[in-house]
Image 1: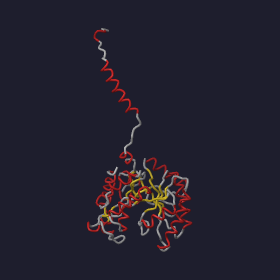
Image 2 (image 1 turned 180 degrees about the vertical axis):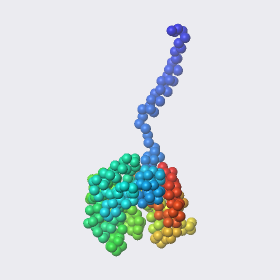
Image 3 (image 1 turned 60 degrees about the vertical axis):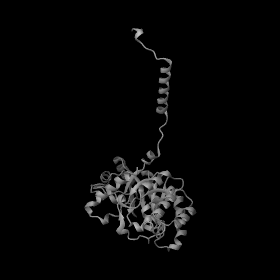
Image 4 (image 1 turned 60 degrees about the horizontal axis):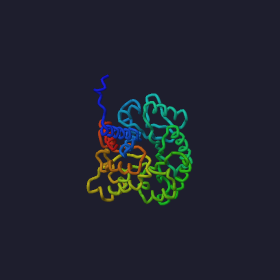
Length: 327
C-alpha cells in the first residue's frame, strides 16, 4: 500500500462527521414518539352484525372483509344466541363455553375482532333474568377479550317520572358485577331518557362508577330534538364516558338544524347515509381523540329502507370507506 495516497481528515472534518453520527444515533436510539393521529389510527372500524348479510357473501366473516371492516358488534338475544352472525354450517352463541370457543376460534382465524357485545335489556320488566344473562355475557366477554357491553336503560313498564331512581339502583347493581374487572357498561343514548342530559347527569353522578358510560350515538341526540350545535356540546360533555359508538346520520332541511324539534321528527324521511348527513363526524372524531377515546367506530345504518335493495351493499361499503377517512 502506498501510504502517500492515503488522505486523513483534518480536525474540522473529523468533528463534523462525529457530530453527524451523534445526531443520527440519537434519533435512531430514541423511543418512537407516537403522534395523536397515529393513536387515532388504532381505532377499529366496525359494523353492527345485522348489516353483514346485506353484502351477500355466504358467511359473516367474508361479508366483513368485503365491507372493509375489522370489527363487529355482536348482538346477543334472550337465548344467548348471536343471530346476526351467519354461516352456512354453524350457529353462533355465547351461552356455553363450547359456543364461545367456536366463535373465538373462527374470529381469530379470520384476523377479525369483536368490538362489543350488544344486549337489548328489559330491566324494569324482568330484572332477575337480565342480571343472569349479563353474568353469562360477561363470561363470554372475558374469553373473547371484549370490554364494552352495550346495554339498554329504557323505561318499558315503569312510568317515566319514577324511572330514574330505578335506573340508578339497577346500574349500581350492574356496576357491582363488573367491579374490579376491565368490562365497561356502555348504555346507548336512545329513547326518551338517555338522550336527555337532565337524566344522564344524575344517573352517572349517583351511580358513581367509571365503568358506567355510553355507547355514544351522536345521531340519537340529534333525533331527540337537540340542535346541531347542542349535539356537539353534548358529545364534548360525555366523550370521556364513551366506550363504544354507533355511527349514522340525518340530513334535515337547513332551517331545522339549529332549532329544537319534536323527538323523532320526520326521522324516516330524513335519515341518510353517514356521508350525506348534517353531523360532521370529523369533528366528532376530533372530540373523541382529545379525550383519549379507545373504542371503535361502529356503523349503524337506519336509512336503507329509503333506497332500492340493489343499492344497499354499495351504500354501506361507501359509509365504511368514509368512516376510514376519520382515521
